[in-house]
Amino acid sequence: MNKTVIGCLLFALVTLFSGCADAADQSAVTDAEREKKSLEGEDYLKKNVLIGSGSVSTPVGKFMLVRNGNNACAIRFTSFSRSGHSAFYAEYDWYYQGDGSGDFTKANVKNGHGSLKDYDHRLLIMFASKLITCGSFRLFWAYPSHVGFKESNSQKVPDVGNEIAPTKWSDLSEVNIHNPLIQWYRDVERSRRIDIPIEQLW
Image: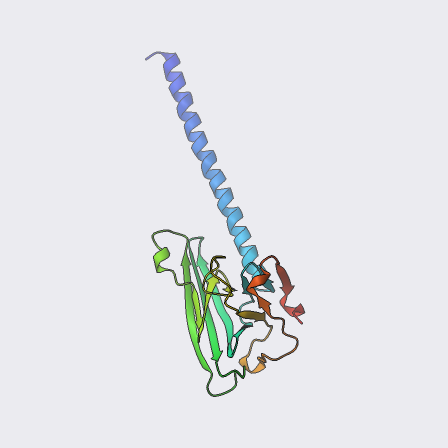
């Protein structure tokens, strides 16, 4: 094998390894940027209410209210976490009042605790649990603390009349579904996105 051929082979190998190194460096930068954006988004939702496309988010520890006819529900996320960008988790408390009073201090209130999980992997998606249950309500969840107006975010699923109100209450004793300061939102308001710092909610 002459020197020219050897030289060409060496150049090709150097170029290949250099390209792989550049690709690895670029991937590392991309992952770092993605992680930074994820952390910024999570931190934002710890301090702000977000009324988005088909869902409402309140900070961990703050109640959001759901009502439809005689049925009322109070939901409070207690935690959320993730494993990289492939597995997502959240925990929530729920309280349900179905007698039409909206009074969560009465003895007939039902309550419980739920766990949610989602996966960004087609082989694991079957094990996801993305439905918030609260009495008669079935509402979809999206990480980290988004609660949907219905059981699916698909626009093909019709509006079922649920209304959601974010609050800055942390304790169930504070919850008053008839408080005139509460702002209720419907799924039909998809075109609007509203961001409100939790301390400025009312």
